[in-house]
Length: 147
Image (cartoon, rainbow, N blue to C red; front, top):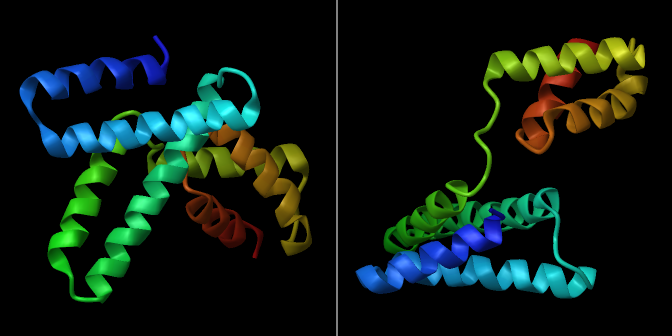
């Protein structure tokens, strides 16, 4: 079952349960996936669906942080709650140990020996992580290993 199908089923369940907050978030995710399909001109693959959902997650996290900085705690909590719902549809993130193994493997495979090789190592590490890691985390680990 695709992510879009799961979201549609969960939307129906949220409607039956009269869970307005969850329903609104699920509708937003459904719309984002539909927009992705329209842009691509075809149904999205699972990896493409993950990209759309990660983009939505990042937007919610950034909005929550902006609301916190502005002293608007209620809106920040609402955005954080939406982020948690989005996170439920993404694969579990990799542990620190798994990330370190991926970075070591990427450095070994690319033959990276210094900061000049960071781009190649990052490209390989990103593909090995298969979307289950934040780019910032990977970059920090690669940078530490290459320095």
